[in-house]
Image (tube, rainbow, N blue to C red):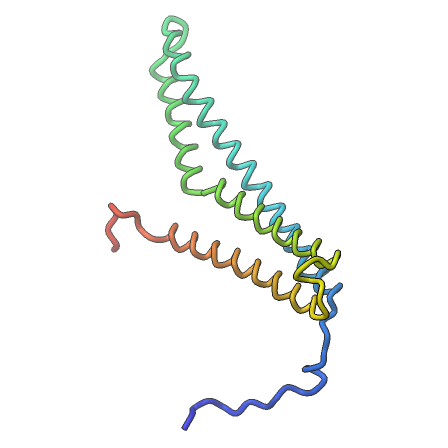
Length: 165
């Protein structure tokens, strides 16, 4: 005997209901594309900004060392090395490049699905194109969410040399 509760079958109007595809595009797809575009831009700026600080600070150390008579080189090189180390740590912890690329990839996949749907290109050239489109978009977003969740799980786990408390 099953413990499952009996489920009433869906009403006939629910089974025959067609999705309002333009509302779905306007309320679900376009906001997701915009969000991922914005996230990609933010990740790209953070990545390039931190990389520039790393490069500038580390490249300046030898220059400052050659100016020993003009500057207090120990203090300046220590500050430059500290800036480079902090930028490296923030870049490694934030994973801005990975985030930028993942968001850009998701936005591009959503844009491609939308373009293919609007121009009735395979696989959106059959009678069930709207359903295929919705399934495709939801799979793209589910894949991105799973990728993000996996990355967050890795970030929260202690490194190999670190002991769990």
